[in-house]
Picture 1: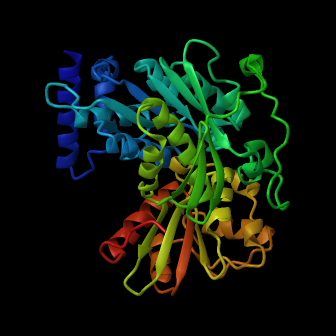
Picture 2: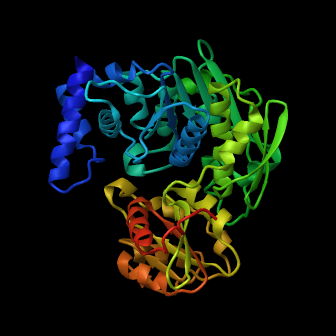
Length: 441
């Protein structure tokens, strides 16, 4: 009865929202169902034969979830997911109710959900997952989370709700030491020791102006995490090397090369996480097949997509939302001859506290000019860059005007953007792009 009632309620609210001219992908259907039909999520997801997989962490959730979903689908599984990016409890309920039949039946084998770190424990308590993939813990949205240990505790709580297994970042001591020690299978992914300097942990990000970071001894963590084993086992899946769009992975005792559609060193690390999870879920599929399927996955919206505009400009849009993701973006996409633009908003979905910008290592911009800063906090961004002696050519707070400037800029432009500005830029660039040219590079 809960499945039927909750699904009908969700669909009715979504229809009403559409009649009012708003997107049905908003959280409103989930909000109403959550209030009127408690227990709906557990009831409806409980019918999935292969259960629920949760992907959580500070950075990489959208891209990694897309990788996992597409590889599972390539192997014949019917996968339920929250592709709209709504990754809080109400968004999950909305997504499930819209994809269920009117009777409440879900025509899927498995669900793979991207979960916001703060909401992952809530969803895990409401509908216990079979597997949890824990990507990383970093400072993010300081006004919501506070310090990084809070983020780690939230993700650890979600991991401990897993019924079958956990896949965890073996290079993140806060998460690795918080993984369950008994009762469920634990798989680890990571990068080769010689690559660790490209993937600094949160504790190392404040050491700006020193070039590539060097990993320090495992950070001291507090509270219950201190009780866990200090030295985790070696990862089962490892990123061994990367160059341009090519990456080499080790899965068990096999080493495999891939030429990926996604770009950026952070996405090669996300690829290792996705491989570890799908290998655990599909143990009978040859690893070579999984790697080839991973290579076919294209970027998620606003995460490295390239837009070719009518005047010939090529624009690459990259989401940045904290010191870790900004650093990875700068390291991956700032190339000789590329025009650089930074767009910064401070709406609720971005996090109102932008003090994290002062912890970003802008050394990859040394000796260069940022062509333009834009967004609500365009002036503040220009000031921040000035403190690192990075000149800014133009300050244009209006995003629409900024797109006009970008469209008239020949050659390649890379835009680093916070979340809400990215959504707006993605909409405008997609509408302006030459048909069929929005792609990976």
